[in-house]
Amino acid sequence: MVIQTKPMTYDLYMRVDTNTRGHHQWFYFSVEVPPALQKSTVTFRVVNFTKPQSLYTSGMRICLAKKSSNYAWTKGGHDIKYGKSHLIRRHSSDPTKVIHYSMLTFSLDFEKTKEREKIFFAYCFPYSFSMLQRFLKEISLNYAHCDYFKESVICKSLSGIDVPLITISSRLLADPKHYNQIKLSEFEDDDSKLSLPMYKKKKYAIITARVHPGESNSSYMMQGFIKYLLGDSHQAKQLRKRVVFKIVPMINTDGVIIGNYRTSMSGNDLNRRYVRPDFRIHPVVAGIKQLASDLVIGRDSDEAKKQNEPVTANEDILCFVDMHGHSRKKNVFVYGP
Ligand SMILES: [Zn+2]
Image (cartoon, rainbow, N blue to C red; front, top):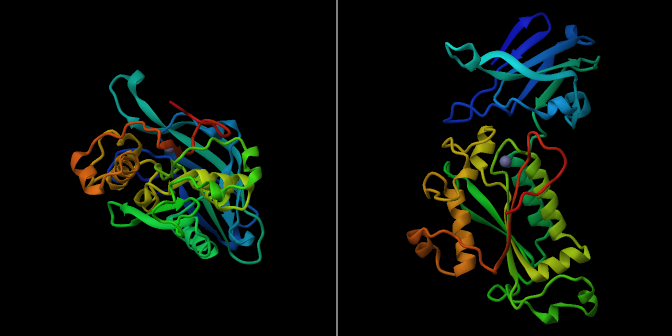
């Protein structure tokens, strides 16, 4: 929703995540600039952020893409401020208990362009489900001749979307029954120079991203990671010989498609559903747990489903890495148990 509050100033209201009453953080909208507004400055106020703190107070700028620049995403805007909004989130008769939303204010100078300008604005550089599909199609074509890449489906999402699962490991297609066994004949003499541990069987690494749909930066990390693993570097080749990578590049496909910031279509934070996921309401989380369970125990999926047992740490699984973005922390970092 948009309201013009005074000349050249607009208040914007983000919608809530589906089936929730909050999680306002992700915005994505476009503006068409009529010729009369060229060379003028417009101020936008996004008035209903849920979080009280933001990197906008540490120099983060607005993501924008202009038609005049072929919609290449960049960062811009000036006079960027983030603070208390006039909009009340929780009313109370006690003034000390009234809670306000937070508000982002920024201005943009509309430049003179030949054609009518159109500008997209976003919280973070968008990475849609269509972009993932395009990327997977591209690598499927580029690596069709390789035997270390396979694309499949882990399960259907709540809305019925096929959720992609990628497997990367050496001899995947040429030796489908035993590709998880280490084969010394695969190794060259100088491979021992790389001090990676070697086991009788390959270890499994489960790598996931985008459980939180608004953290689109995790999809860019995931895309780079997949490209690295498929690449020709010595390290990537060594990893493929020693490890089976099971990758779910977009856990919360529904949330991404709908445009949620935090939750799934059912309004659940899927990252808080790993202890007891419901196969009907949180199918992808249940699917990932079942995948891990199958890798550890090796039993068939129906039995795992029936027993719904927790997955316990096992030496077969080298790691579980879940990629996120963070709204307040800077740079790249790792949380571990
Ligand atoms: Zn997250």
